[in-house]
Image (cartoon, rainbow, N blue to C red; front, top):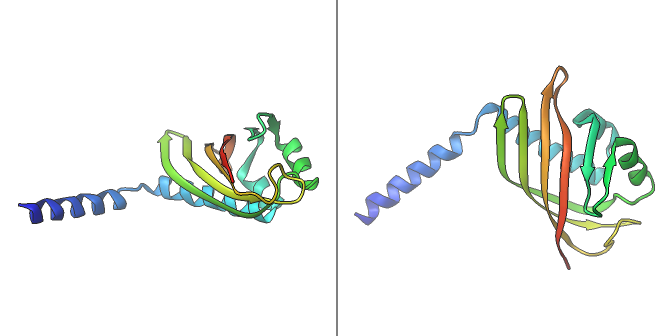
Length: 146
């Protein structure tokens, strides 16, 4: 009986892993691409991924727009020596997708907590428009600093 339950669990788990829709796979890919562009400071890629009206409630509890974010990058106030993102959940409703999870990063330069390891929870909101999927809003909250 125990062996049957294990087989059922394995088959059910495999089915869930294959159940990701093409849209969810695309959102996961774009969310990871945005993370890589963030660590590398690739503002050209970020401009393609962000809506012109993108807003962020950042870890410093300040709501910023695209122009303000670009300025913070230029000033070295958004800079990381390492940055990883774990997507825990993707929810898609029509032309809106929400990714949620956590990030672990090591800020550098003039970024708050430079030289330390920062863990934060995040939510990204994606909207599909004429030019494809773009992030329209983000929330990031620090939950631990080591």
